[in-house]
Image (tube, rainbow, N blue to C red; front, side, top):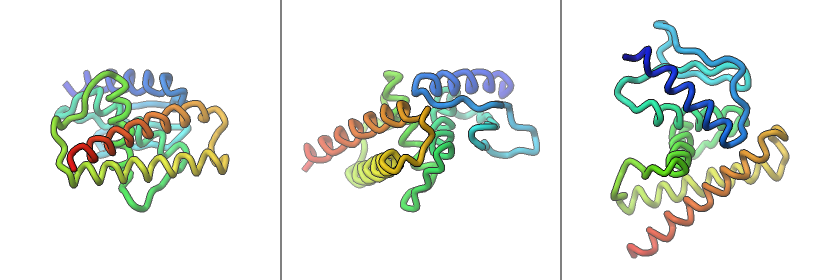
Length: 163
């Protein structure tokens, strides 16, 4: 079963990269038995460790979040790279026409997500203003930043409506 997951994850990952105009890794391969985790080394390598308990599409979206963050060496000390990758994965999932995992988000979690979106948005805009990114990634960063901004605004509206 796990062997069947790899091509699905790889193909979805590549399609997301193309959709957001982000460079596809020079090499994408499945993790060996000795490799216990996913690994990104942009622009050269992506190693995919499949997880049979998660949907291949969700795994691809999460990997894309890590790939994008690592590609531009965006590190946020406030949130873990997994948190930031999850934010990007949620945006891609929303773009795919799928809702987020939770149907109801508690106020505390809503506040955290809003802060994460704001922080990631500020980091991306900061990198764009400082021109600390590859020129070919500009379009991808701009479209992702717009999606983060919309997501952040949606979260703020939801938060305000609950007060």
